[in-house]
Image (cartoon, rainbow over all chains, first blue to last red; front, side):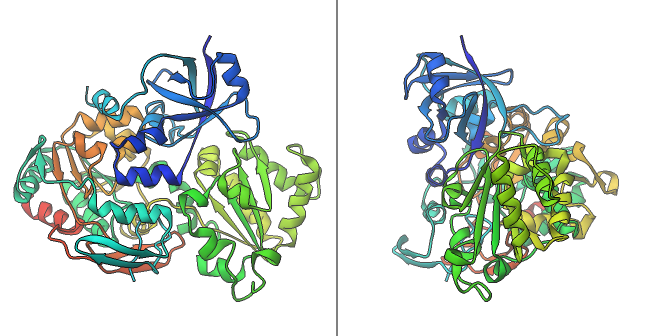
Length: 127
Length: 406
């Protein structure tokens, strides 16, 4: 059973530095494709720290790495850096004055699929 | 000294030494700024049409052709461009009868509008350093977004009336959904759930009125009320966390500021991300009466959410993007719309947007290869000179050439 989580995005200085080196670098991908989850949510999914997860909603889906969050307990809430990967999951519903960049609802489930590459994101945009 | 255009602090004290085309020394720089300066040498763009390298003249001519043939062109980005380029962009949009919008449209726009129109009291960051005794980071994490904010202005430095520094004379408060790096440094941290800021504001209002708050840890909230009440000069730094959480209810925040100013002096300095977003908003306000989301169709000025990049990306038939990477920064649906239309990208660096663009025009990096002026997050105008020579044209030179060709 997938867990339905609210994803909150944040800024990370190390990811910014990696972005400046290049959007297509491994460092940028590695820092953009982590989802920090609560211990309880990892347990619900039956996965360990570092496992791959599919994160999807009605907009799109991406494969990320789930890491145990070092913040206070926050079951039902996950954190990831703001990036083209998080924006894949943001709705552009024109009724909304500002899209929900920081409150994304998504289903999270274990997967064996590889982490989504940025080239794949661009391919989807151009398709 | 060089000016760092890595964020809207526009740090003016950067010591840079270049030797044989490489950075030999870099002082007073944060990690973010260091990444920005080193970007001078990585992933630079070349003039292309449909992925094929062409001359700069050919790329400019093709861009002019696309814009001339478009019925509803969108000109978007601007927050990473100088005031000079932004002015050239507004003139081009006017000439084309097109739509112009910037990143503030889905960022700090609503809050910035209130500041620029005087609906919320504001001050400079130098005032913060000199006078502030309570600083509040609300949905903001400058340790990651504006790394020298705390050390240059808001927390650590001693100022004219704060010579005992943060140890004795400055209280810091973080309000956030997570214990961010900034929250870990602050004396007080209040955790709010995603979207819970409106309830938190109501609880702050309650404690200021001497009522028992209906939200949060009552004892901690009452303590917050005491700190806020005792402040001589409080400053709130709202980030995207607060702006997105409140959405259309930004009046709740301005009402709270009015209440706080009934008790003491409180100011607001929005945590603008891009180095010249505020400049664009001020320029647009002066030129059109609106800070963003403007159409010049049929020679008339109209404003509204239908002219925001989110909506306009669905209705326009060509787009020019400058000083931004919307394919990385905007929702998937908007990125898809932009990627599928005739797209022109003016950018010194490779990005998802340049990779999807029909026409790419390389430009000089401001602060490094080109000079100009910009407005810091607190409204202070900063002038900067290039630190190294470049043959690449500036944004405003490219826009002027496109306008001339049209």
